[in-house]
Image 1 (cartoon, rainbow, N blue to C red):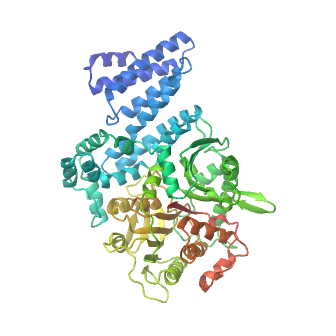
Image 2 (spheres, helix red, strand yellow):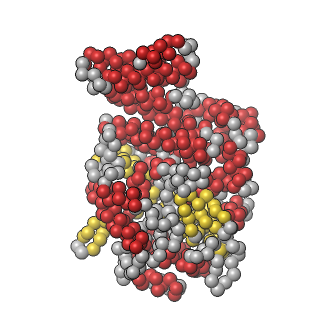
Length: 623
């Protein structure tokens, strides 16, 4: 402390060094206050620490300074520590903590490329959950919503924002800066290929990014939209547009607060439901996470009688996990917000941390000799963040016209995936394209990454088009590209989708069905929610269906066919089509619709309704 004080006094007033030393010295005083038994000494150290941190926070000026977030969080902690001695300081600490979180959003937006942005986003998670814990502990659920969404999907937010920068600048009266941004090399529309898109993203100098963000956040009406998540009234508007009843953040217990569900209703009201059993170190969740996936491709083997060992292991883990999920989260949530008689509630879930690996729609309880599942009582979709939810809700709804690209088994080795894709295209999209390997027919191409990207970027694209991908997929954590589709002759990653397409697909893709393993699992950390599924949403899709684990090839082929059946012949929206297909899988007396392909019918009759691995892995996101 003496050396820090000496260094602080030696450097120039107003310098970054002075700010840094003040931050360290203030944090040191606050730490000393925490170990004092003498109340007077505790007050003295807290007072000195707060004075230094206030000076440093003020000198930082705003979220554009690299120390703004860390200094603000330290000051918020100090205020809350003094709140035990001084009225009003706990609330002031919450407000400072929320303001400091804007520094993390700034850092993610400032980075030139998703890999650097991911590092900045990772730093936001712990801070945001800590501030959310303060808000919940103080019974301020509206503020908890801001904190929770501040750490969600920042890399996705950065990918979306980069493509709209020129429009934002022009609207804010900075046409010359918009022209400079365009001249730097980043493209507003589709790049000719994924590599060009990545190079374009990396070409914008950090100094230019800083000037652009300073210009935008200095304008009234732009600051909150860029650096802060949407407020509850805006979330409510988005929910009404999507015909949903509530957005539900499932928050595991932290050191500052117990587990809870933070619920934003379609009317913009916010409620917190205590969930004392919702802890990340619960045995079923801990065991499921530590076991990991047995394999990372869609060839896990059958989910029918006589499965191989890794299939049984997944099934047993899911049984325990989803039974725990009912008691830890679903039942208390349903009890607190009981549905009106005769009406199924429609919920959008944002699961925090490792809770994102749980299929909450498949939570179950034993009831009268059979299992009762959550999806029998509610229509459940998922979201990466309120930011992305509001963005998707603002896109005009489009009808599913029948235009489609169906990709089946482009790398070979997935017989059932190929049969599934062939059956789907012939039955529901006869005018659509087929890429990949087709038994007893001729494909329109082998299914290369270039062919898929060319279809996504085509200028004559039809609104409401459907993309169905039945192929291998994999996850690689902490890599430049973290989630991949395996196509003929190469891979297509989530990062390439967001960087190469940007927003050029807006107005075109109605639905993307990712019949591939772990296509809605993030390789950049749970709260980043950067998956193949969310990448397609950023790329402009209205709705996406993705999976949470290595899915069995045979059962998946049946589920996907039935999802298209309800979508096309039942005229259901995507969320309801998937729900009806999963309920059909649950019915032991399931009837096959007319025209059901014979090769799929044999598998359909053998599927065990209570084998969660066969149907519960698929989730809906978007409209």
